Length: 213
Ligand code: SF4
Image (tube, rainbow, N blue to C red; front, top):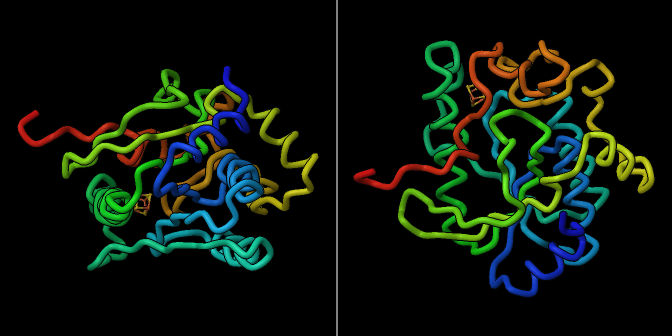
């Protein structure tokens, strides 16, 4: 396993336009802390779905001010609040996947806080890989914490006195939009509380099929 700081440093050296996606969960915030120490001002891409917990929005704003973050908020051009009640795949595609993939066109290195331990859907996650956007453009996706355990993430946060999203204290292990987040059903699968256990990913971290595939 590559040392996260070494991987971050080498990836930044190779990047023309790096960015980080962050939903302000603990992994993302730990990675953000590592990145901001090396590259203050790195764009922090946050997808505004209009369905986040109030606690998430408040925490995002507090950390943005405290760390002087370069927060870039992404939104659907025509949001449809409540679409999740009709079809969660369509809702994630409209509010999350579309805005993020459009924004990533401007970057060449994409840092994520993904970890293999988070979910069976992430078990084969690579620290560095090529990611092709629907437009055909490829960028480098870097997940420096891919091999980290939950315990290592929380230890880093504790050692660096990083304040965390208060929802963890309420028992949540993986936190997304409020209507689609429950306390995890399966302790060995932190993402089992998302979408009432009916799916594990919103579509962002699945390689999109190219036209014609
Ligand atoms: S997680 Fe739920 S509310 Fe959020 S974008 Fe996806 S379906 Fe919509």
